[in-house]
Length: 616
Image (cartoon, helix red, strand yellow):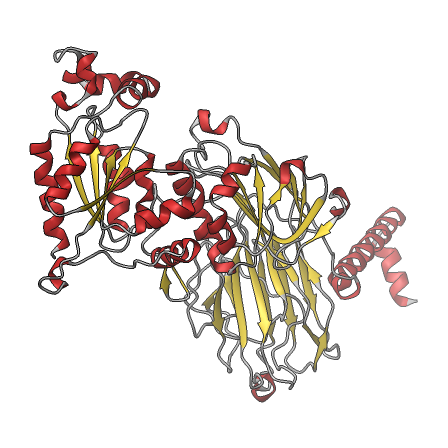
C-alpha cells in the first residue's frame, strides 16, 4: 500500500497508464524471446527432398560401418556436415580424391573432438579432399550426400548416448539441436543428405566425455567418397558414350532408353541425351545413316514414366551400330571390332550385344569374333517392339586410335593387345604364332618364307603382279597371290600362314591383324602424298601389333595417272593442292582412278630388306 501511495504521488495518472502499457509490451517481448530459444527443442527437424541432377558430377560422402557385432561407440545426434569453416573433426589419414574414383579412408580408433582442425570443403564440380581427417564421435553408417545448410549439434558431456535409426535430410536451412542434460544423444544409422554447409558437434568444455565410451569396436569405420558422373558423355569430339547401371529399359523400335534406378543410393534428377552409337561423330557422311537413341534418366520418384519390362536380362547390354562405314573392312575392324573387344572383354562372354542399323552380311562376316565375345544371340533392336530390361547398359564404343589398342590397357594382369591377338587366333583357329626365323633353320633344310601379295581387281591394282611374284620367287620366297575375300574364316588362315604380306594402300592391309608375331608388312604407297595416312592407318598399327613394317613409295612413272595427266600437272607437281579442295576429289583422283606398275629393280631392294629382317 505504501508503495502504491508513493507511486501515485510521484507520477500522474496518465504517466502511470503509460508505464503499465510498456510493462505489458515488455513482458510479451520477453515471452516471445524465451519461446524462440526453446523452439528447436520442441519442433522436429525439417525434412527436404533433394534431387541431384545426373547431368553434372556431384560428390557423395558414404560412411560404411565395418565394425564387429559389438555396438559402435561413435555417435551423432544429427548428420555430420563438412564445410570450409573450422570444424571439430581432426585427421589421421589423408584422402586423395579423383574426379571419378571412390576412395576410402580408414579412421583411427581413438579421436578427440577439436574445434581447431580444418574441415572438408565441398563444391559440386570440384573433387573433395582433405589432409587432416580423424574419427570423431560423429558418424553415419549410410551414405551422406552434401546440400546447402548449416547445422549445429551441441550436447553436454554428461548426457547418455543412445542410438537412433531415423534419417536426417538437410537442405537450404539452418538448424540447431541442443540437448538438455537429461535428453539422450542419438547416433545416426541412416543416410543423411547434406550440401555446401556447416555443422559442428560440440560438447561442453566444463565436463569432458568419457573417452573409454568413445572407443570404436574391433572393426574400422570407412569413409568412401564417390564422385557422381553423368550417364552419358557427349563431350568427346570423336564419339558419344553412355554407361548406366540399375534398372535400364530399352524400348525396341522407338530407340528410347530409360535409366530408372538411382545408382549408389544417389537421388538422381531427370536428364536426357540423344546419342548415335558410332565412333565417327564429326563425319557427317558416316553419321547421317546412324540410328539416334534417346537416353532418359528417370528420377527415383518417377519410375511410372518408363514402360514395363517385356524381357528381363541378367547380363549387361552393349548397344552399337553396324552402319556408317562398317561395310569397309578397315572401318569394320578399327571402328567396331577392336573397341567392341575392349568394352566387352571384361564380361567374359556374359554380355548381350544389341545392334542398330543391323546388317546381316556384317554379322555373318564377323560371326566367329562375335561368338567369342558374347554367349548370347544378337538382338536386332530396330525391329524389336518389346521392352528389354538390363542391370547395366553401355551405349556406343570408344576407339583409342585407328586399328590400335591402348598399349597401357590390361585385364586381369594381361595386356589387352595380347588378349586381342589370342581372341583372333582362337576365333579363326590360327596355328602359326610367330613368323619364320631363317637363322634358326638347320643347314640344308631351309624352309622358304611365305609372301602374300594382296591383289585388287578394281582401283589401286598391281598391273604387273605376276612379274612381282616371279621376282620374289627368284629371291627365295614362296609366293601366294590372293584378293581379300568376305570369307574371313578362310582368308585369315591364308594370312596367318605367311611371313610377309604386301599390298597397295587400302582396306585389304587391315588383315595384318591375322599375321603371326614378327611378320613383315610391306605397304606400297600410290602417288599422291599418302605418307601420313599410310603411317597412321597401317604402319604404326602394324608395329603396335608386333609386326615389322616396310614402305615402298612409287615414282610418277609407276602410276597409271601418267596416262591421264602430264607430269607438270598439279596432280603430280602439287598433290597437296588437290587435298585442300575436297576429300571426294582426292579420293576420285588418287584412290579410285590410280593403278600401280611396280619398277622391279627398285622393288628388289625392298624384298631383300624383308629377307634380312627374317634372318634377325
